[in-house]
Image (cartoon, rainbow, N blue to C red):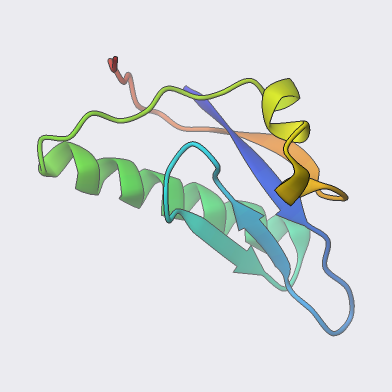
Length: 90
């Protein structure tokens, strides 16, 4: 399962921010792009585990093309994070 992430650019003074648009409230950050990516993978895994433990369904990933059109992500970069879950959802 590959979830798209929206990456807010970082610089010397600001961390890279990552939002997982398909998972409400799931976000992460890191001082480097690599650490932000790793932190996002952990955040996604934790988010999914928590929702499954509650008996909730987990949203399936959206297409990056659809997310990139959203005004709130203008100027952001997108990527995918591979999560080792076999999720069946609506």
